[in-house]
Length: 129
Image 1 (cartoon, rainbow, N blue to C red):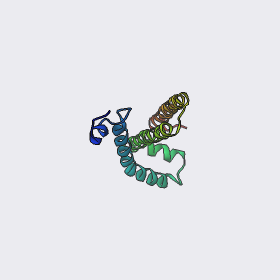
Image 2 (image 1 turned 30 degrees about the vertical axis):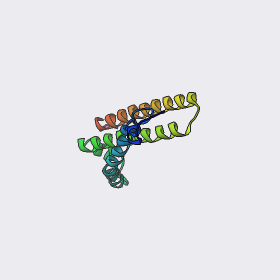
Image 3 (image 1 turned 90 degrees about the vertical axis):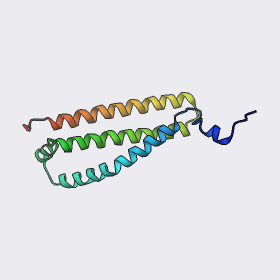
Image 4 (image 1 turned 45 degrees about the vertical axis):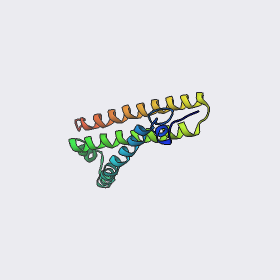
């Protein structure tokens, strides 16, 4: 018999012992995405009619490159957290769940590396096309 109170059982954080941290990370990333998404939409509107030279010049400004890197990293982290929850909650086959989580982590790692590479490459490009 389990003589613990409901509060005592709830403090165990579930079977994985990490649910609260995941929850907090997802909420913090969503709050960080609010101003970053607003900035991204304004940046897209600003760059809407520009050519590649103007867009490259825009990326040469350190603040714009830093904000775009922040937007990319926070968006991918938030997406990773959300898809991970869906996989863990709705896939019941353990083998399929593990494979799906590995594919998710690999995909997010590749997208992060590719995105950072292209942002840094464009930011430090010399303007000669």
